[in-house]
Image (tube, rainbow, N blue to C red; front, top):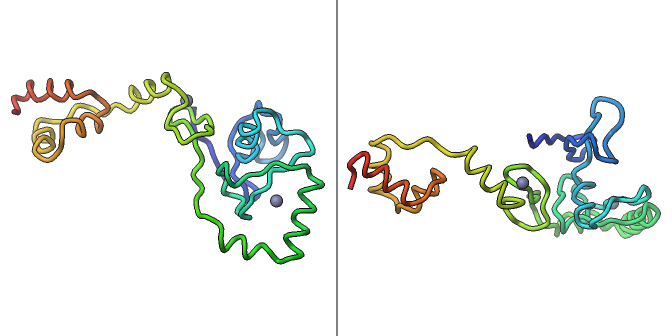
Length: 174
Ligand SMILES: [Zn+2]
Ligand SMILES: [Zn+2]
């Protein structure tokens, strides 16, 4: 599964053709706005037709949970009229925190509500298998052993300390 994101109409969209809000026609068929998906995750239900996802800091690309608010379309219009009236946009932008990082599983790219690397143990295991680096050469390992802790080497290769020790035995590195 690929993390197929792109920018569409000034928003981030992701390919999810089965989603209720997937775009039905034009060049972006099958894409859903990322902020809709994340808002639904926050709510624990589908967005209603009349609901809008508002970006607090006026940055439509910032889909962090803390930047999104779901509200009825009528209220959303009122909110923007109010913010316009008091010329709040610049002030809000000025004080907005920077960042676009949304939480996603590194393996299946499912969106997550918390800052975790994986949605579960299976994805973590899958990821480790798929991203396992090859065993280092003797020279590489020797160099690493001199400069790094075993646990650091193990982490880099997604293996355990005992595997690094095995390699050292094989290469006769002490
Ligand atoms: Zn808005
Ligand atoms: Zn996952």
